[in-house]
Amino acid sequence: MKNAEWLSQLSSLTGLPYYQQHRIFGDKSGALVGITDGYIVAVGLGKGDGGHAAVKALLRYAKAQDSNHVKQALDAAKGKFKLATDETTARLAQTYSFGKPDATDVAERMRELLAALKTAASPINGKCEECGKAEPQILLLNDVPTHYCSGCQVQLTQKLDADAIAYENLETNLPLGLLYGAAAALLGSIAWGGVAYLLHRISLWGAIFIGLLVGKAVVKGTGKVTWTARIMIGVLTAASAAFGDCIFYALILMNENQLAFMPALKAVLLNFWKLESDSDGGLLSVVFGLIGAGVVMYITRKPAFKAGFVALGTPAITLSNAATK
Ligand SMILES: [Zn+2]
Image (cartoon, rainbow, N blue to C red; front, side):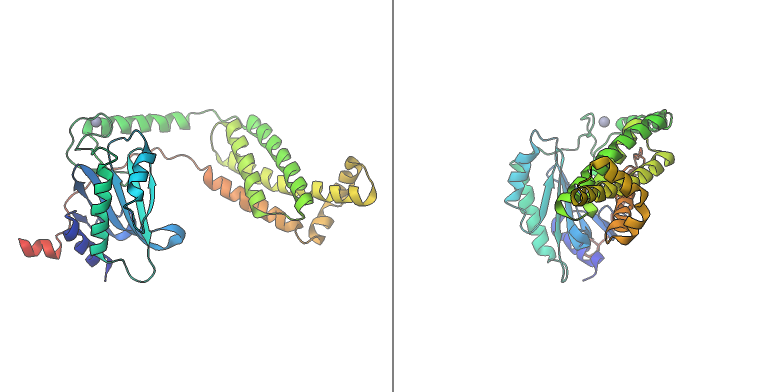
């Protein structure tokens, strides 16, 4: 069955309006978004764990005292859905391989989840998420359905604009970033060399760990993420992995030739390129280091300061709706 057809069917089974234009779960077929007994409910198709096709759903409630309590209540009713909860939202996903689950089953599952939710969390009952004022309309805030009054929308937009300007105006302290980053890189080298010596192997996770350590230290020092800071993170991480290898070789040399550590390290440094290109893992560890740095540069990208408010608009007229009119 085509996605749009399946969603239309689910829409008439659940009574939730179908909006083809809102891709809040990722799929271009859109999503069902509506209110059931004062709770916001959204269901659609998208990607679950490992990129598998999945049925996804959101249940939103008034701010809960204890999100674990909500989770426990929903756990009993979730069926094959995977569940995560926070203060205001339960996120559900059920992956499938051979055809979508039956819409009737999904509708029934939603009914059971809502019945369980009622025992653990209060409904929102059309109140603004920020100030609690009556706001019956649902709108999407960065693709999350919510009640948000016009006054609070203005306030949030102004606050985020101010945050963005404040961020742009932050002083960047590159020397301090370099100092922190170099210290972290040295620590990373010692850990890398020591672990490689003990375990006789290097690992990609180790490189990502060093990248994270160096990245955190550089950003702490500079105070904000700039291209110079990103390049610094990349170079320091690769250098840390390379110097970690030197420590590893020096430890081996020390052990084999009864040398002290410093002379052994000096001998290694003088023959660095030869050792790295001769050994199996040498260049690999620098490559791992760079992958680690790449991951960190991605993670430390500039924070987003944007509130996108989108009205739900008109739902699609589904075949079953049209038939009853
Ligand atoms: Zn408000």
